[in-house]
Amino acid sequence: MRYLSQYPLYRLQIRPQRQRAVGDLGVEVTQEGLYAEFQPFYDGGMVFENEEAAALRHFSFRGLTQHEDEATMSDPLQRLSVFDSNAMAKREGWDAETQTEVETKLDDWANQCPDEILRVTTTPIKPPYPNWNEDDRPVEQLVVRLQEEGHDFEEVLYYEKVFGLNRPDVVAELERAVENTKAQTISA
Image (cartoon, rainbow, N blue to C red; front, side, top):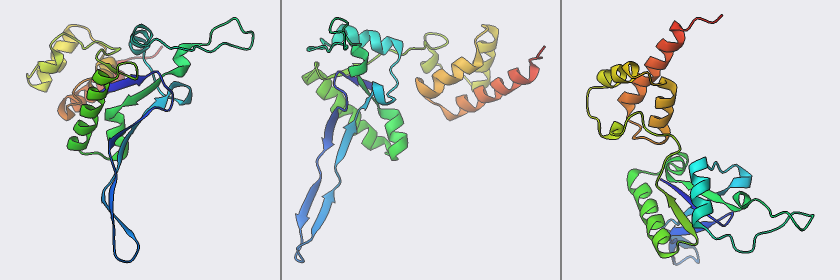
């Protein structure tokens, strides 16, 4: 899941850190804190075109800044920050339960405070066909259908890894199809 905020460096506490005092004046941490840290656009946060359009429709961007000429408004895109729960889970080593906890809290907060967080429900790349994610045929048949319909295997592979279900068998077969296509291509 991907979430946007109109505030750079936005952070949301998912789970508080809990601790208790011990007899030697030390502290024992009983529950580690968990935070969702949004990455600002100006610091490398990747915002896709569909997300930019949704943010411009959704957020009001009060108090827009101006450039030095005092007439040209600054780009509101520079104020956005993004949180990608899948990328964060991979980077932080979260298990499925922790990732679900984070996404649930962010969904709740997006409903309670829509001026702060927007949950992005669309993807910048469409699936190869409408029921791609629900298709449960054998992987070989999926690849044959993709080839018959003339899909670009690299684009489908990117969709499956980033926006799709990231099924290991489908990814492996698509990578094989990409390699086969490259081997068959003759450069002039």
